[in-house]
Length: 320
Length: 320
Image (tube, rainbow over all chains, first blue to last red; front, side, top):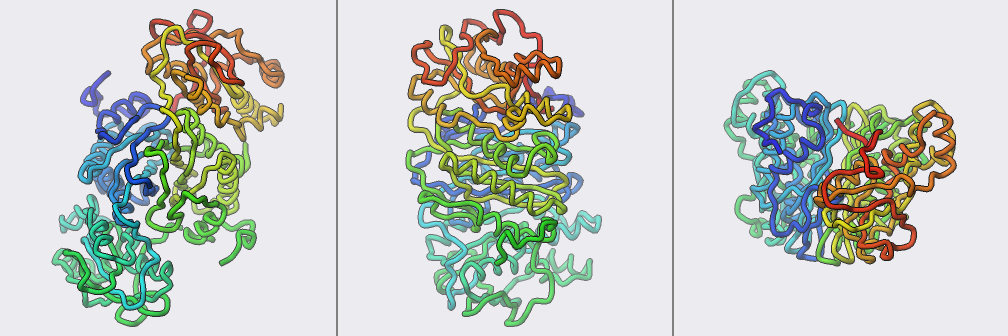
């Protein structure tokens, strides 16, 4: 079988063919001792130690969730994996295995698909997770559907456990990716730290499990926007949440972008997603693990407020 | 919350919105005692009894794998589920849980998405499997990515176990869906039995487990074409496979379509997929469970032959 490096640089998926590409992709994915049957059969089989499996599926569409001119194939692979690994983090769990469904135009460069897979595999490897299978087919645009499996060492952390009196807390970078997206949208490439944060988010892997061990009452990952996700916690828990705008340390690159674009940098923090920070509630500030910041509180009632009042600005992302 | 029946008939996904549609979809999916956390959180959690999980992902694209004018939304839902449930059948296992990633244009009728989900849920229910989550996003065309989880009661049946001297055997309808597709492609709607077989395949659910219990040496489901799948068995097992063309009972509707379209009806059987019949190898004909038909044999060597010679005709489907 030809090695990936044998591919002509301009080879498309149509040139390489479904099975030719799959065999090259599979070479990029490692394995682990829990994989009983890996890619290449009708299904994969993995060992499950803890009597349960945590499962999440996410779909990314070119032009909507990523642009090939704004990030490298490797970057998109890292992002696609991070988005899914983060869903397991948000349950207080650890990701173990993933599958990738890739639909793509026949003229997609095979090198893009291979770069995507390299980035995806590298991100998974960083948390000890393995790609075990997938599907490849033709479509008008690139669509990536990922399913991630994982496990929890204690009860999964759901959205519905927040109680009045809890503190609201955040861990991980927040607003950076939204700042990077705003920069790219204006045709700029700097501040580089924000653009890189958009291209390759750095979710606080492991912080979900630490939150569960510390007695967090609810947890969610911020993919659609901080206030939007706070709203999901509030709705699921039947409580009100108030966010304190003064709680955030606005990092220098966000201040710079705010100044350059004439935008309030706080809006990136309150409305931005894509960093996959974690938002959770805890019985009190004393129970927070290291790296968490108190940013508000849980009250009786419903809905989300900022500094006790309605928020005037974007709260997040809507898909339709 | 509004009931599905409250939707205006012409409401689109954009009218209903992401969360409005998701809440309606979730109502259509049942639950079971193995579901610890169902749809609506960052991930679902299911109980796993047997220490392993069987996993497969498939992607279907409108215009390529289905056409909205050739089948109802319910039909497409049945087909999408059947295709995935069949992958677990082909490992000798039973499907337990599924996720759906749906990417669709904003102007897709919400009623189509709901009809799809109804058909999907009904097909899953027929084998005791449950939909536990998914994702919904916007795209230029309808793309459905399904991941199915399952379990085996004995060692999973892989493609690589066929040995020279084994018999090759088939169970389930084969060629019917291909006949139906050919009919639809010419603008006809009959024979109705074939068109219905294309719209709603009837995979031989449970036959995979029976094959495993009977000592089958390898197993695969026929989604791309009988000879193509026989080729996958031969390659994975390092053997040659010979198919006997006289072994098949050609059903009356296939004979009728062959006559009407001037085609050899055997080609639908040898080259057709989409029925999700099972193709397997067994140590001898005496070990076949009920409902299996011997259609050939496994020999030393490599490749697939028909009646000892090269096949002159289509062997299956290629994706690029």
